[in-house]
Image (tube, rainbow, N blue to C red; front, side, top):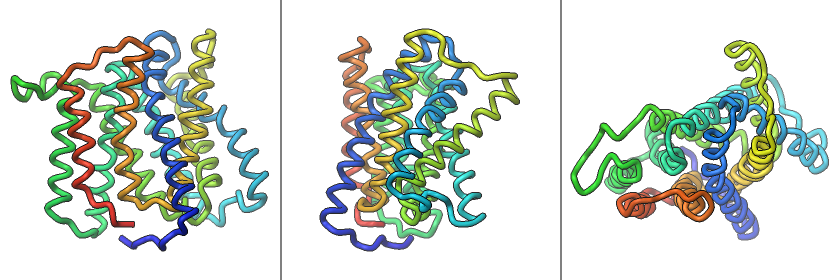
Amino acid sequence: MQTDARPSRKDRAAAWLWAAAAVVCWGVMFPVGDLLMKEGSMPPAAVATSRYLLASPILFAAGFARHGRRMLPRGARDWLALAALGLVGSAAMALLLFRAQELVPSVNASLMEAYVPMQVLLLAMLGGARTTWRHVAGIALGFAGCLLVLRALDGSGLRLGALSRGDLFAFLSGACWAVYTAWGRPLARRLGGLPFTAWTVLLGGLWLLAWQFAAEGGVAVPRTGLEWRCVLFLAVFPTGVAFLGWNEAQKGVSLAHLSFLEYFPPLVAAVAGVLFFGEKITAWQWLGIAVVILSARLLPRDAG
């Protein structure tokens, strides 16, 4: 894996601010998504489609105002890559995530973020990146922390029966985002964060729109005040601000540092769930969150 050219101090500071904004927006997304999935009547595909299609005009308006014709991809290869990344990193990721939130608490669904550093590292290893004992120890410790948060591991030992189909959907959602982050990085850096974000969000929404017509025979839209408020929040912050922040951060934050930050949205989600939605987090789950964050200290943070 190639090492990124060293960015300026100003670029690094801006990139870290963008990354922090993405982390916070994604952290609060999970309790809001949990509320929508359990109190609303919209199917997961409709929620994901609505958030993307509502966010797209804002992203494109900002993009054309800032970049002009440079918002347009350069050739068939770019179009194919954007379509594939929109399918995997936008459409499939969101569809699996909201399906998970129908079945498990928001703190469980938020573990999709904690899986990502391990999944990105594995993708890097498959791509030929050098592996050390710290890499392996970080993966093992992070996995143990995830099991604690999922209540599949506690003082009585390993309880795999606590895992559910919703937890599998969260894991697969994280895998989709890991592919989007690792394989989309060169294109995001070349096109720029705003063009890359706008196109993958729009194309993800169009993939989901096609899915709804094919699988569900039509398109569901928000109907109640709660559904509109939740979907608009998801469109502006976890989609518009967070996707843009993540892809802008690619300019000045290494891939390993960027994937490390994925450990923090579950912590934000847990705190938000307790403060605003009355969710209960056990002592073992708090320990798991701490272990997951600690495991990031063992992961490589010098690679590009």
